[in-house]
Image (cartoon, rainbow, N blue to C red; front, side, top):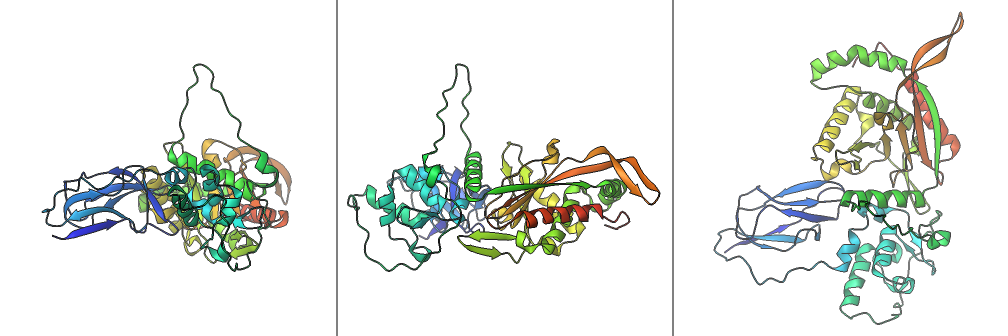
Length: 443
């Protein structure tokens, strides 16, 4: 009899694990080739995984809410069905390590490293797991890491926890002698170090009649990611008001013809993104990331578009190589990703690789906002609501007051690497492109 191992497949750039959220087949059920077998969730995207074989499901190696790594065997299928379903396979109990993993976002692993008292550096994810599991600073320093420069990675910490649970780690273990490659020290103040180490969340006591709502998985990830971002990056926000009257008039003129020709709507968002792409080309040092003391200048311009979900949570699908698309191409990409987000059909690769993010707070009637940077990027632009306002209009025959369509652009940036001159000039350039929009252009 042939047994086929069903493994958790690779589901996008930097996605290393997924949570089993629902088994669609029970042990003993017949399974067809490519028939949905199990539902899994990565950082923000839920997916159905199809079966890679036809036969009978004889074993499920992970239970609901357990975390599997890419490449792990999650199920076994008998291709001829002659084998009885396994009943004596030991169940995989949820470990404290897996509980800790659900508290933090995988994206935090790539954030700026954090130093310990000994001078070693650890990612926020490693620090979070250590804190959740009660690993002391001395124990963390003693772990021999497999990461760059001997740095302890999440995998190393999880292995240490398993050894500790099995009694293989002696108390106050002394690290073995080893040669460590020099590691560049991060210049950013570290979350959980210095004065921040003494800051703790307040304990809130509910009053009689209060409703207690547990955060769902996505909200926990968003919360962790936002707190990490404000700790890692010193935020500065610059504001510019832009006159978008020509854009409003042009869209009103072409939207019906565009809908008839393309079968979908043209909104303001792709028009604004076109201007942002042009500004990024003018100021490429906005399109960067920071790793320790190194600046990574991105080759591609991949625009993230923050999108509100029906659940109230937030997701950021990414338009890849936006600089290679014309306005019609950007419009198609925006509509496709927005629809996928609303219908919960985004793929893992749809939210990977962003280099700059745009958030449209004007959708909710907000005039402006102070957005938080989407790590590991260094800047984010908030688009405010378009309003009719009285404005001074300059003409060769003198100035007069007229009704214009205006909006505020709010640009938050990482002051470690983006100073006020660059951050302010960039958002001003975006406004200039919007104000110089050609009302006679074709789409």
